[in-house]
Length: 134
Length: 283
Image 1 (cartoon, helix red, strand yellow):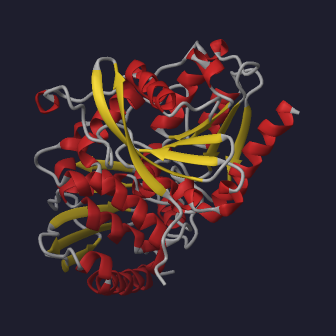
Image 2 (tube, chains in turn green, blue):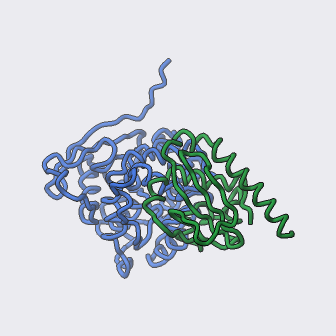
Image 3 (tube, helix red, strand yellow):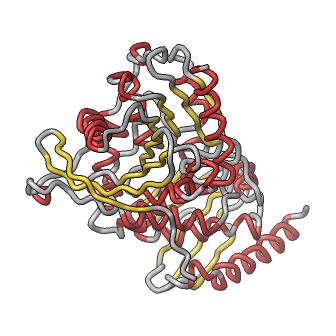
C-alpha cells in the first residue's frame, strides 16, 4: 500500500471511529463531561483524539510528537490488531488486560483516564467493531 | 400469577473478633450445604443463577451470604467504623466465614469462593480443613499483589465508575452483555469497600511457601480459573494448584474472573465437574 493509500485508509477509519463514538448508546447516555485528550500510539501510526462532552472534537492521524494530551496508550501494531479482533484472544480483550499481561503501556495523567474511565472503556471496545488503521 | 422465587433471605447476628455483625444471606434447596461467597466489593446476587437452578437446589442447600459491609450486611454494629480505614485481613476473613457457618449450624459444608473469597478458600483449607466437606477456590492464587491502588477510592474520581470499569476486562468478551453489565452494576454498588477488601487480596494474603501446609486428605480442594481472567490467569492458578498435593485444577474456557455471574450456563458444567471430582474422591 502506498503512503497516500495508507493515509486515505486512516482518514476513513477516523471517520468511522467518530461515527461509532457519537452513535454509541453506552457512551452517549453519559456523554456530558466525557472530555479529555488522548493519544493512541499504534507503532506505525499515532492517533490523537480530543473528546468534548462525548463528541469527537478532533481526530488527528499522525499526531505530532509534541501535541499535548492527557494520557496515551502505546503498543505494537500487531497488539492493536489483536485487540481489535471481534473475538480477541485472552489478554488482548481490553486495555487493562493488555497492559497487565501483554505489551500495552499506559502513560500520562492517569487521573484523567480514571475520571473518564467508564466511557473510555466503552470507546475502546469500539475497535472490535471498526478495527484499527494499522 | 406472580412469579415468586423460591429463594428466601434472612439475617443472622454473629460476632467476629469482638465485632458484632448482622449478616444477610439467601438460600434455596435441600441437601448438603454449599456455601457461596461473592467477590470483592459485590454481594450475593453474583450467585443468583445457582440459587434458582433446580439441577443444584434439588440436591444441595445453596447458601449465598453478603459479607459484612457488602450488600445487605452492614458494617459492625458496635464500632465507629466510619472513623477507621477498613482493611480486611486474612484472620478476620477466616473468622467471619467460620462464625457464619457456626451460626447456621452447617455440618461439613462445601465452601466456594471467587477472587478474594477464592483466596480465603485457600486459607480455610490450610487453617481449618476439618470444618469443611470440600473447598472450591475460583480465580485464586497463592499471592496476588498489585491491586491495592488509591484509584479505587480517589476523591478526584467517580469511585463507582472506576471500580466497575476496572473489572470490565476481567470478564470474557463473549459473555452476554446483560450479565456483564449486571456484574458491573454490583461493583458500582460496592465501590466504597473495594480498596479495603483488596487489602486482604493484595497485601495480607500471601501463602507463598506455605501451600504444603494444605492437607487435601482432610478436605478436598479444587481450583478453577477462567481463561480470560487477566487478574488471576490460568497459569497463575495452576502454578498454585501444582504446589498443593492432591489439589485438582480446572481451566474454565471462555470465562473470566466472575464465572458464576458473567456467564452461568458456561460455568454450570464446571461446577458440576468440581462436585463430581469431590464425589469420586469420597467414593
